[in-house]
Image 1 (tube, rainbow, N blue to C red):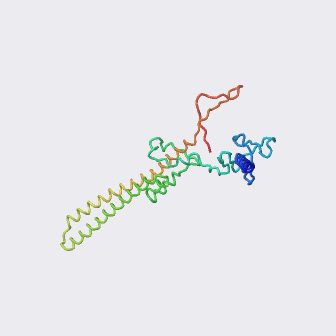
Image 2: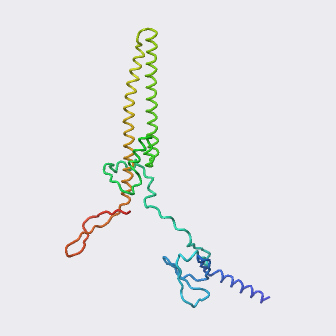
Image 3: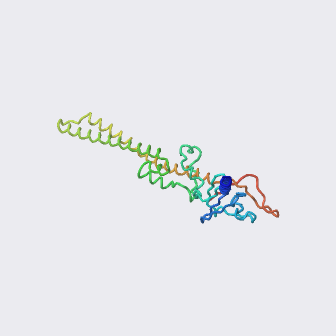
Length: 255
């Protein structure tokens, strides 16, 4: 009975000892029973349990899949690194309304990596009002401009229809009575004037829409150009003394 109890205790001690090991799993599937001594910036320092009096070993993170520590915590090293992103990509949701009063589009200077094309936005809005603003990321603004264009078009169609109606009514009245219709002539004149005014306003609205699409692209490009600028201390040559920093700050562009 005593022998059985002693054997049970020894088995328990062996099991606890086995579970107390740190297990390093390499990327090739090899497992190493070890005692991890230190985890550095890029390497892990450890001693092998099958050679406790041996040297200290090092493994790079790139060679390690995971480390299971004696307390049960598992640290994985094989998780894929996040894909690099442009440092201002997450800021592409900036609203034109928030920066419109900060930048003057007349001061815009084009750069090869600008995210928006002013010329492309203008051409798009020429064919479909509001499309250039949508391309610039301003969907609400673009849809509102397109709705205004539809409103002008419906008003013009109504006014032209009244002109044709009044002209047809006047011709029938003249044919049947031999006299011009005063009411028909008044309606025709009012419809004609209204149609001319509406057409002029619609034309001005279309020109503004094209210019607005161009300005939106320019202003947002200027905003992202500022995000790409980093402060830099400027140096100027000095005769016989090499380079010396100047008073003030300059800027450098990152491409």
